[in-house]
Image (cartoon, rainbow, N blue to C red):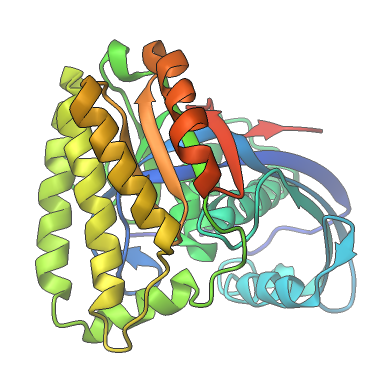
Length: 350
């Protein structure tokens, strides 16, 4: 595929300031394993959240050589600044003028960083939106669909799951039977009206930064004994989940949610260098949830990202009953609980 940032080599960079707020997303069908350069080994599907988000402001200026500074939650973060700089350097083939930029970044999260709530998705999509906005400013572009697709393309090159945060609601990424699906950018997915408004109550079992990064976890998939079987399973789950979402079948969606969570963590446990990100309270909460659902029949299901914290997914119409259950049965297992829901996607701050 031709790069979505091809043809921008002759741009003359200048000064510009912009700010974007971009949400995290929770994958219903997981992306775990790569092919090529930041391309998914299987299609994935996620729900964009509303309140778990990153707000990033960027000041671009003209310098003799690329310089990146980053302030995260009021503190200078040289490690993350170096990560952004390395990312920008990978874009030099299509954007050769990028080595002449000064990039001053200020960013903050509304939720714990590095604890398995996809902070890379919100953080790097927010930065990619600022970069796409800068390119739009320099080229005087006004095509919103093209802007979002370009932002998703740039987000993917920074962090795969970040490309899905560019759109609100449900989003897919990866080649599939769906029209306009692509490995290079994400696309929004329309679903049954009864499943448009879903809640996500996040049980923060442990807010500490995880000891094995998602990047390292992806890296182990190349030598994983069960990698091809996992990719086949994920493709099957993807097709089943899309169909269930379009038909409003929350029970079928929920079964896939939980199967995908277990599969993701099973791949960690059986990787060439085995590890687990689950905590005892993660497993305890799952057992309590299953007992509650069996007793009440309420459609509340869990999933896990690459971390110990449970995402409880349920229709908004059952919110009061589920929140009562969480308060009585699960709150003692958590450091914190984040109450979130489906969101409409990123917002430009200025």
